[in-house]
Length: 179
Image (cartoon, rainbow, N blue to C red; front, side):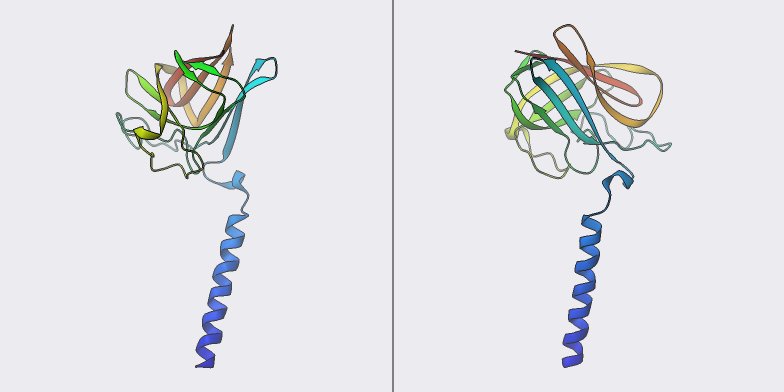
């Protein structure tokens, strides 16, 4: 009986050690490594998006592993976070300063950006429309070439930035500006 208890304790310790090592794993070595993009709105105001960047690896992305018309977490691994130090207008929708999670609904001709009040979750499942702060339409265009790494970026413009998401052969974008 004592041998079984010692063996069981040993197995538990090995499992806990493996978990601790995995938890401390360098996130940059993941198949979908972490990425960050920032928009400087001036006057100390900014927007920061933290996400994980999956790779296409020859797969059909939109209309394939990311089905059209369904909520998508806009990245991989942990949920994609959106933090603003200023009240914003995003695609004509008011977004107060704060921390949010973003999701999208990709379609061939139009995407919808979902800004969710629920934060801190793993990337999926989508918490539901009752957690939405707002939704904004995104414009869709083809990229000039294949995009291997899912990318979220900001393009600086007159009064703000355009939030841009690109992957495979698709670009979705929406204008953002400080209030």
